[in-house]
Amino acid sequence: MTLPFVPESFRWVETPAGPVLECVPLERVAPHFFTTRGVALDPVVMVNQVHGRTVVVIRHDAPLPAGRPDADVLVSNSRAAAIAVRAADCVPLLMADKSTGAVAAVHAGWRGTAAGAAGAAVDTLAREFGAKPENLVAAIGPSIGPCCYEVGSELVDAFAAAGHPRHLIDRWFSRRRGSGIGDQGSGFLASKERLVLDVPGANRDQLVLAGVPDDQIYLSGLCTAEHLDVLTSYRVEKEKAGRLAGVIRARAG
Ligand SMILES: [Zn+2]
Image (cartoon, rainbow, N blue to C red; front, side):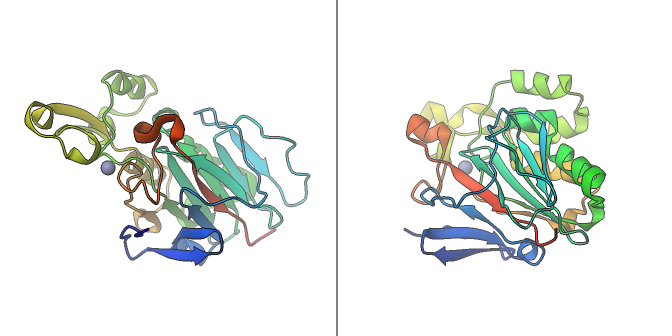
């Protein structure tokens, strides 16, 4: 297995369960990792992900939620339990507050991104734990990239209906030539124009809008549809797809 190249702000770490991806600046604030396709998870708090912006709050002085509540965002100030989201093309987003130590995990595919799940995480960290957006460090893990995420125009309508301003929608959706996954097609398909959506970029923009400094948001730049020996893609592999997890635990609390 050849681990794909990652930017300087990320590093691969070998563990007994296989390689995991860490964001170096985020690691200074909170222990966390993004798994590759085969890594089993220690017990952590997870949710039944429903592609929305509902938040589950984990407090150090309260019992953990029973079962898996329906939600796509977890926030926590508990050292006792890690929180995790799972994804196979959707964006796994992890955040931690430099001052309070509180953390968040977000699962955002196109629906969660249209619904503003990342902003819901920032708002909840502020309201529940007094985290200031300017103190947040965020890592956006591997997801399907704009290189491979062809979508229908009805998604543009869904983002407009959700209230996102036109100039942002125009930035998140673009038209590209090529056949799709990996752009390795030829002939007619290679010259076809496709509408693509940049889900990691949209989540970065939403964090910035919520007050997180741009230079404290780190993107792995890894596309799940292109490194199938290490990552996993629902688009490409359908029901054979595994899941990547983004896991983070608070140092505070
Ligand atoms: Zn790609």
